Length: 479
Image 1 (tube, rainbow, N blue to C red):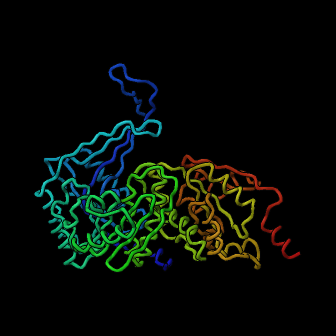
Image 2 (image 1 turned 90 degrees about the vertical axis):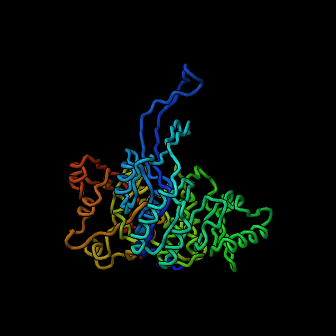
Image 3 (image 1 turned 180 degrees about the vertical axis):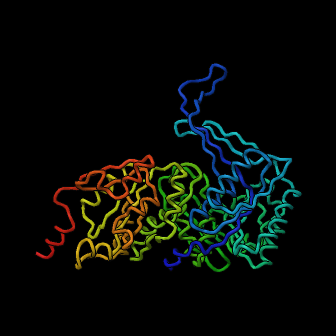
């Protein structure tokens, strides 16, 4: 696996075409039954709107740093405008087409005590006439992308999908499809289709034995004129099957919280990784890891490069390989976390030789919020602060060790001369909710504290573990 390609995820230029939806969530507590009917009364206290359907696929691609556009149909209504605003916040190039006679597909879920009480669907079937509007727009924007990903939820947006595939292939594009129809002939010419096990069975796939599964999958893609199938198999993982090859990947998440949107994560990750230059087998391996992360979360979830980095680091321990999250674009992911309402905690240090004091301190810092950002002094900064014999470990190695800790979400270097060896400028860029510093400091002595307090944040000083320090470790080694 060429791990260096992880640094080129933004090279993937992908157009998602399909059934876009607005997912709405109403959260509240339910403590009694309605006197009008035997149903729970939910006192709504929180509202959430999220991109759903094909829009969730595009969101997954954007969170993985892929360059993504989205082509779909919405109504001329409030739901359509809300969805447009969400896509703009996610930095997705929205190419949505408004139709006046049908509503934006919306699904409202009432959630109480982490349980879905009811789901209300607002939708009408789009016609071939509506799909023609997408086909016309596809022709206009196709040259801007290298990959076309069709997300089919059988809502009518892709009634003319065969014409769309033909257009994309004629333009030399790689085509991926998350299918809904049991007639795979509709997807003739595609490079990859990603059915789940149930969709595979409905299409005529056999699952009574591994041999029959493989043979029937090969027959299906041969008959449909599709190059390869990525079959997602729930607790059995997934299989990449083509005419001459088959690669199986074991499931990576044993405790499943919610499978909603897992298929979106799989095909989005597959497209981004192939777009970055990975071989299909390696791209599926990464997509399998991403699926394991997604199903551990509630609701239609996305996966960040940082989460994949941590999962991949654990996965590759047996091989001795390692992938470290690139420093580029981390600020964008922090901004995404803020948009999701997550509390950002910041701390900083040299972390030259990681010891028990550091580990406990970072765990305490992370406990203050949802995400922990560690500002890491670069090598030149440490030399100026600690002397010519430091650092013991170079920046890349220190960042690698920190990134492997469960408590650390992002590591960002700092320490140029114009920064005066402090993280003050970095803190201003991140603007964390909580700034944490370890040691015998007062708040007025902490770099960046004034900015955090001025913007409504908190500053906390934590004690270090007595007897633990990098200097003592070095002295003991020398002795």
